[in-house]
Length: 245
View 1 (cartoon, rainbow, N blue to C red):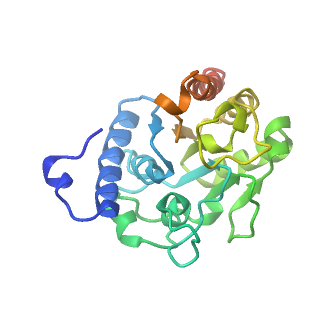
View 2 (cartoon, rainbow, N blue to C red):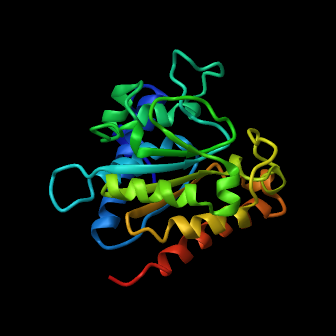
View 3 (tube, rainbow, N blue to C red):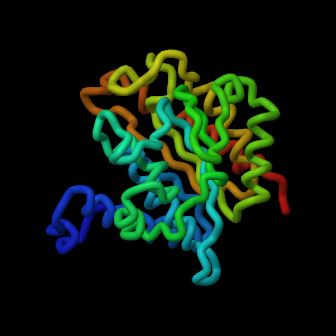
């Protein structure tokens, strides 16, 4: 996906990112309307704005769908420009998507209304108290616990569609040695793929995104590419195992 010539001339990198997310949203919405299951291979987590916006506007009418999100990451990505220590925009997408900051960026991506925090489930290694976001532990992932299924059932009852997002920094660092933001103790791609299979059995789950996969010189052996493939395969298995309507 590339910006149009006019978009590429727009002032400001954050502004251009918002425009790119708006374009991504149109692709996701079109794919959904055509009966396809969007899988986003994303440069970073900021692209959740386009994935969520596309799902939100993929319904049969102009009325926005209620979108839930499961966010798997080594970090919460719930910082705002006021709370961030690093200044990284990549640490803010969940806060942006839920209307906590950078409203103009969210609106340019087409995500309106923002996601209520009660529609968000986070699986991460930095467990912080924040609003109504439900948090699951790595143990819930590894054991595919009743907590995991309970969260999926709750989201399924509360929303129209669910987006599941994985940042590769949340994996076992041995599988993403070229990623600069890994945290020790993450699940292997096989462990997470097994949990994804369970999550993608739920009919409301409508799209999948995998972000920040190391490539090129940062993945000379291909181990990170294989890890991403394992995650996508796990998701696909879940979709295939859905009960016929």
